[in-house]
Image (cartoon, rainbow, N blue to C red; front, side):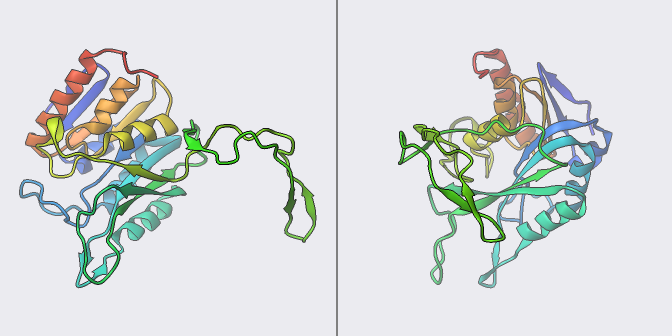
Length: 267
């Protein structure tokens, strides 16, 4: 492990996250997309067992902290591996809650199959250490019944009905976003040197949802640095770990550029 590189609010480590994570203090939020099921080749790196990494994340995550874990399953001999579910269950065994099972809906199909529906989604598991201390829900869902006065009843377990608790409220124009997110992910520009960059919207919107300004965001699989770019642009501190020098250099360059733009992007 080499000495970390500090770029403004960001600290980046070149090395294996399994070596570096135990040396870190507490972090508020983890936003990451690990190399899963060997679906991409990463400069000849050996496939990584993510279960020990999840255990280490559980150790460094602060009470009330959240980890967004973006994964999918490979298809082998015509069937999915189920690796994603094993990882989710392991996180629960480590004492984390499976707070939400979110879906990243892709605009395009990467691996079409002839004998089943085209796979066009990935999981965004939300693990939390206790109840999440922060939730800044994004309210951009267009309500079809906007302007209507809420009314009605709610049925209880014993069969009784009671008046709806929000009776009389006016339905707003926009409501809380659903837990499936349609996102584009163009492979060009400053992320073109990485085989599987995270969509910027994924990093940005999860950081916005589960953290506040001044919090520390961690990505133990920093890749091209998308999580770090979003974090520094939103006034968060960032810790990134990447074991491949080529991708580490891309991440440093992108985060340095984002840092140079100052606080123009802070919301």
